[in-house]
Length: 231
Ligand SMILES: Nc1ccn([C@@H]2O[C@H](COP(=O)(O)OP(=O)(O)OP(=O)(O)O)[C@@H](O)[C@H]2O)c(=O)n1
Ligand SMILES: C[C@](O)(CO)[C@H](O)COP(=O)(O)O
Image (tube, rainbow, N blue to C red):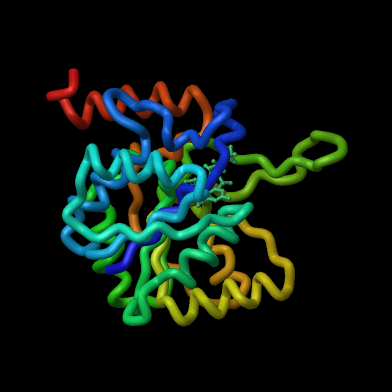
């Protein structure tokens, strides 16, 4: 299974002046944890690391300090996640028929989650790791800030990554999105807009996306629970 890791963001919400994936989480950069989990997956055999060229020397140093058993190809990122994944798809080797896409910022995903997603992708054209939401969610009017609706929680799931797809279909969806100017925050949304089915695979509650400084503190806590040897 081929894996693309979008890692070309800015980390604006982290308030950092550099790519948040280079920030330290316990004893190593955040992206090193993501790469380690992907490397430990039985199913993944090729990794495309999508980054901004200015970060490549740091990525190279991280890989030198934490060598992987699988080949890693650097791919130039775009100005949005959507553009970065588009570039990633163009950078896949020609033999890639199926692909998992996993945010570099979701550094706590387990190898088992990668393997379950890869296995499920043998039986459907598109999938997404997700968990049921725990909160009651409100839809709020933009202008008046009053509630318009309370959707049925039974039908609400929080989207995570990995997300997995048939490569030819996902390329078609991205091409269509690009020509029609669609702006989405994940790849499943492009599949949905093209009326293609996206299967849910049970995600992990601990698979948070490190977005804010608070997330970094929570990630450190979770990592210490997952890896008692690091205490
Ligand atoms: N142009 C971009 C923007 C984001 N990403 C990646 O997409 C994932 C999810 O994005 P997010 O958490 O929003 O990261 P940032 O864009 O870095 O954060 P922010 O939106 O706060 O600036 C991250 O692994 C990020 O590196 C990317 O590859 N290319
Ligand atoms: C793909 C994603 O991680 C699913 O939760 C998320 O949509 C990334 O988007 P963000 O808006 O950049 O946080």
